[in-house]
Image (cartoon, rainbow, N blue to C red; front, side, top):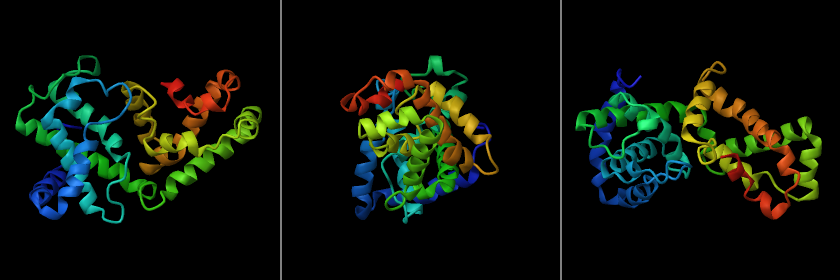
Amino acid sequence: GAKQHSPNAEKSIERWSPIITRPNEQKLKQKLCCKSKWTFHEQTQHAIVQDSRLQTALTRVLFIWSLRHPATGYVQGINDLVTPFIVLFIVDELGADLDSFPSSTEQLDDSQLDNIEADAYWCLGNLLEGIQDHYIFAQPGIQEMVLKLEDLLRRVNEPLYKHMVEDQGLRFLQFAFRWMNCLLLRELPLRLIIRLWDTYLCIGEVTADGFDEFHVYVCAALITMFQDDLQGLDFQVFGFAPAAFA
């Protein structure tokens, strides 16, 4: 929990933070500054996403993780994955809830924000450790999950599969890649994402099992849940189908 902060994460952030100012790292820093504005569903209009202290903390988390994982580096979508952790730790520090989420970090002192940053960094690292093949070159882990989703839907709902793939010529990569890359953070409300991720963490022998295996079944369930609507859509509308799940 956020009250028992991760000492290793704090030491890591303390160790790596000074090199953010090195000239050869400025390009990466600028890229991550843009990503730190957050791009996930429902929270994009929340005032706190414009908070400069929070953007700096998020940028630092992404920057340090990228430096410590040169084989992966920063890949678009990783910024989404850290968001639920930061939000939960802010709520925990303030003793608030998601319905009364603050509009800025004014209520947090520097020590509290440092703790939130450290905990978010540790949680992100622990999550990505199990799904790192999602974010290396060509992202083979994500490609495999998309193929599993297509095969699963073909087996459990062949009429819908034929409508999507054979009748409409839809490729699963056209919509499901983002579902796997951002773990539905851009499709579902944050409150639901937190509940969903809580379930993922309880499944399997290692953390990655829920995010790597069970997530595919969740995506298939979403498609099946809206099968009546989807079977009435043509290809042009199908391209925006994921938004209907929000």
